[in-house]
Length: 340
Figure 1 (cartoon, rainbow, N blue to C red):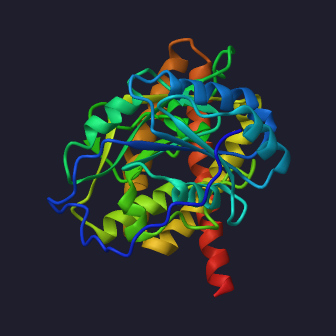
Figure 2 (cartoon, rainbow, N blue to C red):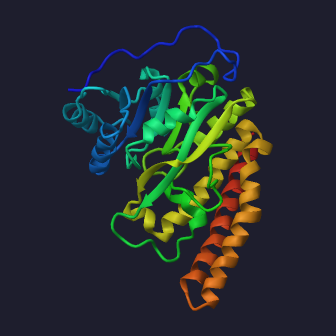
Figure 3 (cartoon, one colour):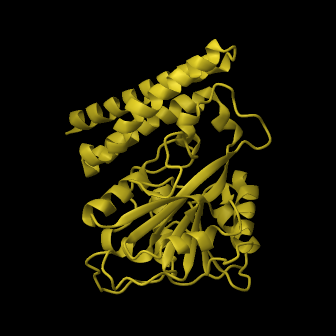
C-alpha cells in the first residue's frame, strides 16, 4: 500500500519576495495528480508510469482522491512506492473539487517544486522533470508551465473544432507562445511552482475550479494573477518543450461540450475579474479576442473558399465560442451585481 503519513507542515518563516537572491535553485520535485472517478483509471496508470520513466523521476508523487472512497481504496492498494519515487495516496480534506484537492496535495509536498499533472494526462517525454528544473535556474522564476498536446484517443479531431479553442479541452491553443516566454498564467494540466509560493500567497481559491465533470475552471489563472500582484518581479515561464499529452474523452469531442465549456469559462472569468480586478483578470483575453480569434475566422473562411467546407464550420465555431464565453461572463457579472 502507498505510504500514508501526516501532512508536511510549513514553518513560520515569511519570504518577502520570490525574487530575493537567497532563493536557491530547486533540486527536488513533488508531483500532484488529482483524481475523482474510476472512469479514468487507465489514464491515471499511464500518467504515473510516465513519471517512473523520467530521466529524473520526482522524489514524491501525491495522488489526491476527491471524495470517492472506492477510488481511494483501489488507488491505495494499487500504487506503491518504487526506488527513487515515494507515493502518497490521500483523500481531499477540503471542499469537493479541483481547488480543494490541489490544496490538500500541496500540504503533503516535500519537494522544492510542486508540479501538477491531470489525471488524464501524461508527461510528453522522459525529460519533463529535468526540463522543468532547468527552467528554475533563474531565482526570479516562481513558476514554470508548458503545453498540452491533445490525445484524441485514436479518432480524428472533429473537423469543426478550431485550434484557437484548444483550452476548451484543456490543451494548447493558437495564440500561445512558440518560444520560451513569460506568461500571465499556465494550463492547469501542466504547471509547477516553487513550494514556498503557496506558503506566501495561500492556495487555490474554492468556488472557481472544476468540480467533477462540471466544465468550470480558471483557478490556476486566478492563482497566477494573485502571485504576480503580490510579487511583481516574480516570473512565470512558459516552456514549449515542456509538454504533456492530454486525453480528449468522447464527451469533450461533442459540440454541446464546446458550448457548455465556453459558457462556463465566461462565468469563471467573471469570478476571477471580481477577485483580482478586471484589468489583470482580462488582460490576456483582450488580446486573444481582438487579434487571435479574428485571424482564426479569416483562416477558416479562407479554407472554406478553397473548397474545404470544414473551414466555414471552424469559423462559425470561433464566432459562437466567443459569443457564448462573453455571454457567460456577462451573466456572471450580472449575477454578482444582483447578489450584492
